Image (cartoon, rainbow over all chains, first blue to last red; front, side, top):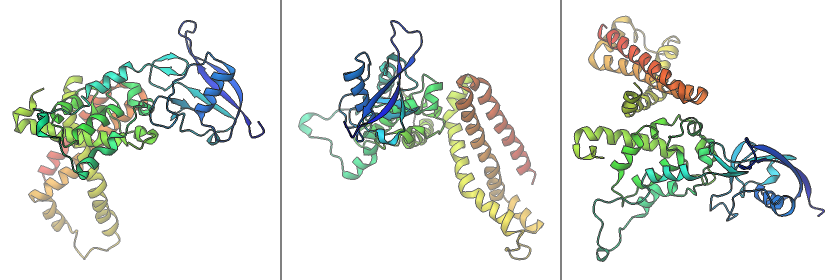
Length: 249
Length: 119
């Protein structure tokens, strides 16, 4: 235990059966120098207070389930070193989401937004299996690869000022994902997705704050995706006057 | 009004984006020529004399360039100001802020069109 140092954790607690509003609870625990914030939460859960609820799974920044507010900033707790913080660390549930319990937030609305952008390959006519696979060059893959690295951790939704203001806003991750399919050479669904992008709560609700890209733990750069999507949605909208076919929903 | 603005978002964004382009790339050159190079005497004698400047501004391309240079940055500013206010004051303010910002940009567009037309 000699390499352990004491740190204080101020953790937001909320029990829907008992509490009207969230409250905070303080824990002082011994931490190791190489611990992440998630290690401390797991220590509290295992050794100090078994009633604490938090989501986590892979511990290697792949599953995207351990996103929380750490000292007021959205962070993946498995990727956030405790050594970057002082003696007191505040941990709360992700901003802009309804809280189910303690540090666990409701994902339902977020999932609906994902569905709205049709994040799958849309084609007018599918090839028959015997006709073979859809081939794609490395350059065509490169065009969208960055935007496909999203792990749905929702940190961008917690950081985005528009998500907080407009509950209907599609939000950074969903737009980046829709844009990823619009850029995919195998896909033919951009007119459909651009229609969704142009509706109220679509890409034009973005207020250029760039916070989504600042907090993204996978360097997806959703802000770039949103701005590219705005441009392509304008081009598509202009085209709809020239070719009536693309006006169809 | 809200639905009209929502339908016009692609146009507004195109004007906003155009304003960015003009403001970042063309405006600095314009400012350099008129506000730095001319007063410091770096331009040839009489390069910006009234007759030459007027002839440059009053030909059709000159008029178009001036119109774009005046109007697009205003649309950029109007859209930026609108979203800035939403971020600060919440979406409920948008019912007033969006029409006010875009009406101001429309007024400037009208004044610029008349002024450039009268050159």
